[in-house]
Amino acid sequence: MNKVEALELLESHLQAWRQRPYAELAATIGTQACSELAGPSGAKYQFEVEAFWDARPGGDIRVLGAIDDGGFHAFLPLTSDFILAPDGHFVGEGS
Image (cartoon, rainbow, N blue to C red; front, side):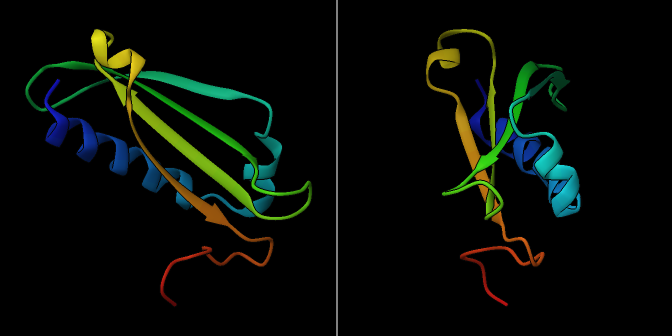
């Protein structure tokens, strides 16, 4: 797996999730979105994203994305996440 390419795809697709409002992310809790992506090299990747309560229902929402090439890396995918507070700010990130 080309880790640089996979990480760029992961961050790019998570960026779309970062644009979603809190209520929309909350509505996805309990589900998992999966899709297949093709990198610039033509390599195919499996992308999965899931939102869940970070500590308690109604609080912060953590969104976790994972990407792998379906081979050995499926057991240890690359991951990235972010946390969105109910007031719409990203937890743990600069202002």
